[in-house]
Amino acid sequence: MLDKIFYGNTLEDWGISLIIIVSALVLNKLIILLNKHVIQKITAKTSNKYDDILFKNLQTPVLLGIILLAIWISATRLSLPIKIHDFISKSYQILTVLNITWFIVKMINSLLDEYIRKTAEKNKLDNLTADNRLMPLIKRTVIFVIWAIGTVMALNNAGVSVAALLGTLGIGGIAIALAAQDTVKNIISGITLYIDRPFRIGDRIRFDTIDGYVEDIGIRSTKIRTLDKRIITLPNYKIVDTSIENVTEEPGRRIVMKLGLTYNTSPDKMKEAITILKSIPQTIQDVEPANLSAIFSDFGDSALIITFIYFINKSAIDLFETISIVNFQILTQFNQAGLDFAFPTQTIYIEQ
Image (cartoon, rainbow, N blue to C red; front, side):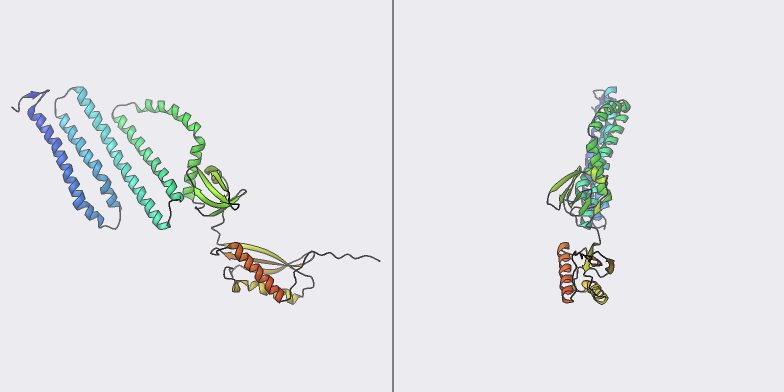
């Protein structure tokens, strides 16, 4: 009975091929159970996540690979028409390459997700940061490139003329590239902003005539709220091509004051004024004692000029409030010391 021929093969040959496929299915079931109850429990005890990622993503491609191999072995041992053999052989080659590509894509996708998670934990980032906005773009780009390479290799193995196909697609690609060159330029600039990190969301920046706080860093554009509370949306390439001053990153705000005292101020009183100015950090906590300077710098047209330079700590809650406190302190102490501020005056001598 086993010697009876059906469609060019004996019943025994058909049965062996079927057993090979069933055995592959049973082997896959054993691999699933082994991975779930043994391997995953072992990898869960390790300190790093990379072994968990590997075995989690490796399971499905391995199972599919075993099935493809079983089908190919079962088919090649049978006497089938040449066209069917060629079809099965080419299908096996294409699917094998695509299966390997699928595994690589899954691995890279999981590794990038792990990188984003660690970066978010380290920097305490929220969903509005540039990292979380640009990383999906980078992921999609990398995955697209890998799938493109895998597809080309698969078609090449199947005997398709890849060069002719790429030549046909190239003409349309050139037209699309010319139409989308501004968009591509903005996207590349957005990636540059992500890599260089000249500023973050919430930072105050200045460039050209714009001064404001960064509210959003997108793939194509960046939104800045100016000091007038208006939103300005700028293409990323314009930001990349200019010099940016990150005000938030400065260690302290440098304040320069010119104080004019009347010409009848004695040298001792000038020294007292300078002493008062140098004591400012002792009474106002947000003023840095280091790098403070108070000097008798000029003889002005109608005043003796003292140049006072001081720095306000970056941690100061309100910069302008601190400046106001300093000014009130100077005014109060100068008045108590009998120091008179000068104002523009002009003396006219009339010749008799």
